[in-house]
Image (cartoon, rainbow, N blue to C red):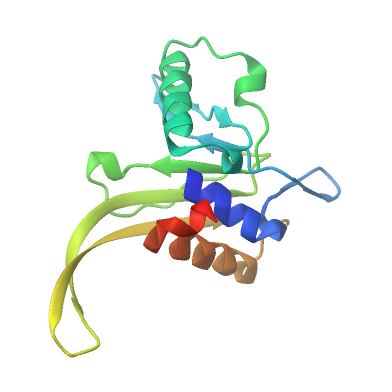
Length: 166
């Protein structure tokens, strides 16, 4: 969530929503987190996620998720936001395509990490952890080129997390 929020700040054209007849660009990265509940899904929103620490985001997601499962969220806690993170990796799912729920313009589907062999510059082989993510975009707001730019920003942040602190 922190990396996704930071990526949206680096690609402001993607930090937007469709507002019926126009694109509305947002200043802050308000990120929904997909929470499965019996009979459906809630996406409580971590507001201004780019400004929060990892520990604050983690605590907030735990609280929002618990209250979502208990169906105790207030509408302002699950309405709005420009993007959602959906994680099925914790269930061992390697890749999937998530469906966009308006008003969100994008949803990032996060899969499980897997150890993969990769060739190093010197020709040797090393094993690294690789994660698959899939981005779904509402093309009225975020086209494929902007989506690719957003994924590249996210990749850079995940591969070098210190960038999120700068």
